[in-house]
Image 1: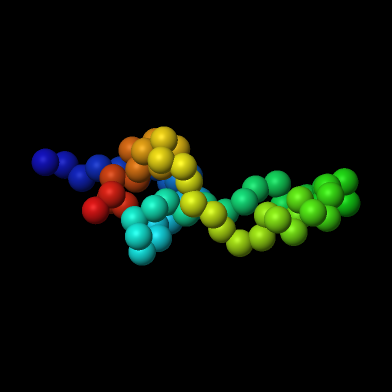
Image 2: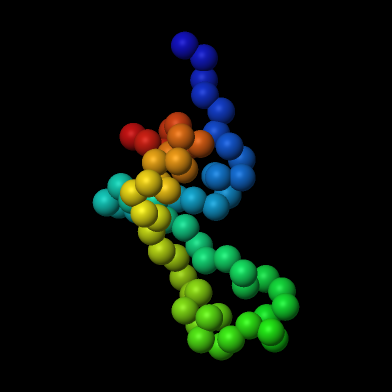
Length: 67
């Protein structure tokens, strides 16, 4: 069976936690930050986990992250 390709955009943006959930970073923090609320920028620190339905889609892009 041939090797499966991973979507290169997905491998840059998503990872796996020890419990098996898919983790992601927050967006909208690269430019035009003067227009954004301080509360929004502060709450977008760090990472969070995806919901079940979204993680199913992401795992279809990353076949070797499943196991």
